Structure formats: structure tokens, C-alpha cells
Length: 478
Image (cartoon, rainbow, N blue to C red):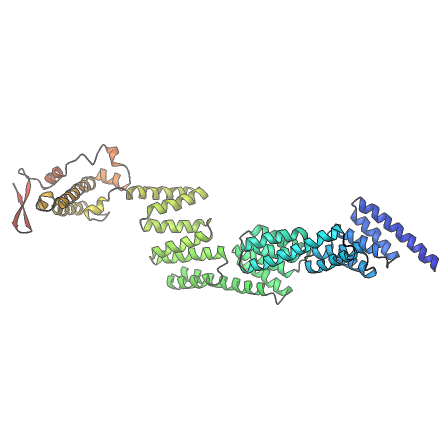
């Protein structure tokens, strides 16, 4: 019996030596096989478990490695490398408190062990990062949480919990591809991981793919029925989808008041869903424009682009509202933003139209000066000129103060300008289209308003005002 045991021991040592050789060559799979053979021959040897634990760690199989490391110290509590490997596995898996206990035990056995001292510091650093991240998550400082998790993962590369927290924060920051990548990596290793399913759904939810998001939330709840975050997100997603669809239906049916109420209710559901809320604000802005509440429509579209500065539809809607309220500079700015992003013929034309209206708005408004509509007839323009010219003629204000006389003379001249342009079909067409009148060779500062007045009223002796009493005037033609 003794010879048999001795033979098995020699055979086990041979397997161990071969395992060591493969380990040295970094052929960890073969090393694992030979260490396993050694354990099969001699299952009570702590070092064999320790060696296989080291190999599993190199293969990234930390949970299996932890089992071997724990077995090694159960067999030999004085096995320092066994305690170090146990601590390292705990730390890699994110259990920093358990890691500290293992490293402390290693230091009790060998208080000068440099590796144990350093690893103990690393474990405490991870504990500190966890505490900071927990506080910052409550404060919604997601960038800082990501920073802390990145630092912690340097020591705990196999910790799914840290990865999930990082991914969730990336999703909250709108960094969806990064968040999805982290969650997908975990799901490849564990397709039933409820936290990873939740984060995957969260990314879709925040990208306004609500129907697909619900599927992931439901799947997460199947894996973990008490998953609170998945439950809340699923409820919000379903409510958002329903309210938005109801609002769209009311809008299509022309029930704008109801559509406004439904979009408003939808906006209250989840302030964190930036993309969906941007669309809801834009939709409500469209409703307000239909209700001719243009200032409210502009405000809604502004809120939409604050949430999503790439949202072309919101810029277009706001630009149209700016055009309708004659805020042409703002309209040009929005159309420029749109055209820079999407250089289509349609967007180019919209920008050109806005620029033309802006140019026209900076000239004198001859229609306003005469007090007529832009579609006024020739006869209406003449009547308006007659009324305004007589109202502002300098002779009528000869008894007024110098300041009033100067102002009335200015208005009289502008009335003459307006009539000169609007009574000439060719000039009127150029004016209406926004073209420069100076190209016609007409300098508006050179003409004489009195000559226009005389030409309009006619008569060889000219025209004058005479008083028939205080504040009363009548016309006298020569």
C-alpha cells in the first residue's frame, strides 16, 4: 500500500513538472490538463491546486480558479501563495472585502511579503472606488462613476457588477455604443445575466427603439422577477409608447387640443429619455403651430434641440415658425444649421428664401409706410398715397415745432418713396422679389417728394394748405 502511494506521488510530481513546463511556455491549456492529472493522482496536495488555480487565472477563468485556491488553503492554511491566489481571484471578481481578508492572512504568515502588501493596497483602493461610485451615482454624476469603475476594473477585470454599473452610466450619458458593447460582452459569457439584459434594453430605450427595449426588459424580468430597475424601465417604456401613439392619433384626426395634452403627459413620464422627449417636444411644437401659438411652438422646438442638437426636424419646424413671426435672422440661422448637416436642394431653397426675406426685412417697408396690404391694388395704393401725403405734407405742419416739422417732412418723403416704387409695376416687382432697386439706377435719396406730390395732384399753380380756423386746414389749388 505504501509503495502504491509512493508510486502515485511520483507520478503526480511528474505530471506537475510537465504542467510547470507548459506553464512556462504559456501553454496554459496543456498546463491545466497536467495539473489536473496531478490532482487526480494526489488530491490532497495543496500546491497542485495552487498551480492549477494560477493556470486558470491566466486563462481568465477566475471563478474556477477561486475554487482551486480555496481548496489549496483548506488543505494547508500556511500555504502563502494559496492565500495570495485566493485574494487575487476575489479581487478580480470584484469582492474586495474578501480579497483583503486573504491578503491579511498571507501577511500574517509572511509580514514582509511585498506582493501581499501591494495587493492589499489594491483591494482597499477598489473598496474606496466603490464607495465613491455609489455616492456619485446617487448624485447622478455618471461621468465620475465611469471613471471610478474604470479604475476599479484595472484590479477587478472579471467583475460583472462593475462592468454593468459602468455600462448603465454610459447609457445615462448617451454613450450607447460603448454601453451596448459592455453589456453584449457579458451576455456572450452569460446569456441569462439580467443586469446585462436590462442595460441592453436601456440603450435601446434611450435611442427611442422602445418596442425592442421592452423585449429586453421583459427578458430581464424573466431571469430576475424582482429586478427593480428593469421593472421601472419596462413600465415607463410601455407608458411612453402608448401616450406617444395616442398623441399621434389625435394629431392625425385633427384633434390638436387632445394631442397637446397627450404629448404633455408623455413628457412627464421619464425626463431621462432624451431622444424620445426631443421628439415629443417637436411633436407638441407642431401642434402649437397648428393652433397658431407660434411662440409656444418655438419654445417647444428649442427644448427639442437642447435635448438633441442633431434633430433636423425640430430645426426645420422652428425655422418655419420664425419665418411666420418674421424673425428672419433666427430662421436663417436654423436653416444654415440644417443645410450644413444635410445639403439637399430643398434645404438650400429654404435657406435662400429665408435669406431673401431677411434682406427684404432690413429695407423700408413701403407697404407699411402707405398702410396697405402687400396684395393691394393700384387703386388702393393711390388712395393710400393721397391720404398719407396730405397727412404728412410739410405745409400742414408749418405751425408745429421744429422737431415735429422735421419728423413730418421725413414721413412725407417716405410716403413719396413708397408711392414711387409701388405705383411702378416694374419697380414693385423688383421690390417684392427682394432685388436691389439701386440696380435700376434709382437713388432714393435724390428724388423730390414735392415733385411727386405735384405730379400726383396736378394743377398749374401748385398746391397749398390754408387755415380756416385753429387746427383746421383745407386744400387750395391754384
